[in-house]
Length: 288
Image (cartoon, rainbow, N blue to C red; front, side, top):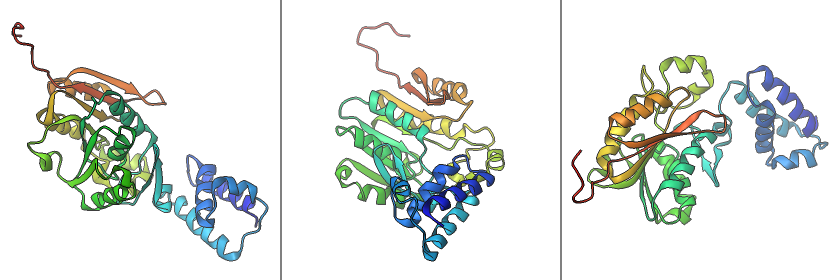
């Protein structure tokens, strides 16, 4: 079979297996198996594959047929301007989370100190530092496996080495006593039943996906810990799941954050929720 025929047949097969993006998946995986860029799948469309090449393509396509994430199969995922290592120890970075990064980049004050609660692959921490050369970022991660991935992603981006550190920490415990201008997090926000509705998610670490029976348990924890770790007037930025915006905004308000608001992702889902910690009143102002 030619390259074009393998791409077409793989696309058709993945469509029947429930892939949401069968053509894209086929092109990425076949390109990975053959060591080709996606454009080369077209410029070399009529080239016949060897038996070894065909076997390599079939092996990767078969894994995707089991709904294993493409990023886990290739071991890589593009996020913002970065190309990151991804393993089953971490969530696959998703485009929705780039909205959260963009918001932090926009609101962080000059020279800000940023903490990324539950950094996973390091996608948020590294992207913020990449886009804002004036800030320093600490990525906090309780999972040793995930922290190892984040550390390798930091090593692969040496231009960030002097402004980013990755630290094993359960929540903010590892930076107790430090103060930050921004705390950001994409916390777990699913409920257990979501894993039954979306079987593909079972390939990713459950502890990074499922918060509990309500889905906002970790938002409440981050809000409480951030309230104690932020400087006066500092910002908390959280990612929320579909339908959770009002609840998460209520959590921030109950934790004492003001100026609480939400920003939608490209699909119109309120995705980034943020609020500001209380600022000291100017001398001589009336008490509330």
